[in-house]
Image 1 (tube, rainbow, N blue to C red):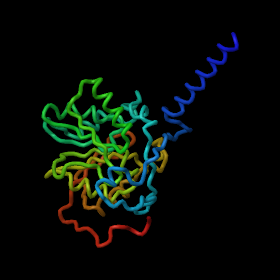
Image 2: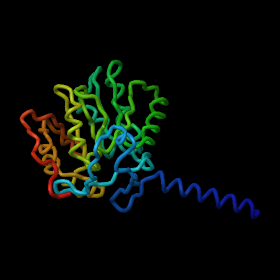
Image 3: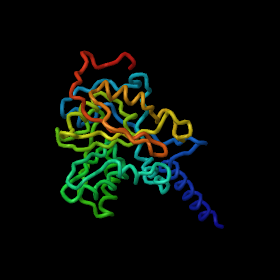
Length: 269
């Protein structure tokens, strides 16, 4: 092999290795690690709206907040074995979607659940696909077009506001994303305002109670912690489903008897 050919071959291998590291999840033993996003504390959209941005939390009500997964980890969201691991087909049954509904996939990523939900609410319904990373919304757009799906509206949210219409959303789906919210109180307040009468939040989180779920503890939540945080922010449990392999599926509705506390910032920051 000539020196020039050897040099070109070595260069190609280096490029391939860099792509592999950046685009694929890293599996260490039983725990899955994904690239973390570098999310700014206040985006240009936040500043343009003159919305005050409180400091991001590192802890909330006794729980350490996880970092946001970067768009570099997007291929993991559409991995071939996701049905075996998480049974999304069963999740869709439990959501009870109907044509004409307005639903939100909050933290949609590259649209795994968005594109599953869209046909079920078509033709008159729509999916509001919200993410704080423009790169994720671009990947979603490419996948939507490739599948011929046209009832998805991408929404570039912020770390404090999902930018949803008030009182119009029938269902907000949060798939393994709530534990990454740096401003949980502001986000839950915005979600509460977005719900239509009878609207629900469908929360999926990996079960921290189960040591056999192969996800890092920081990216798991217990039912007890979930209930603690949602009750404190004006929600009550409507129903739940315990038949998934790895995740809790809990449905919350607005608690009309709830009153916001005088101070909304607990001591554990």
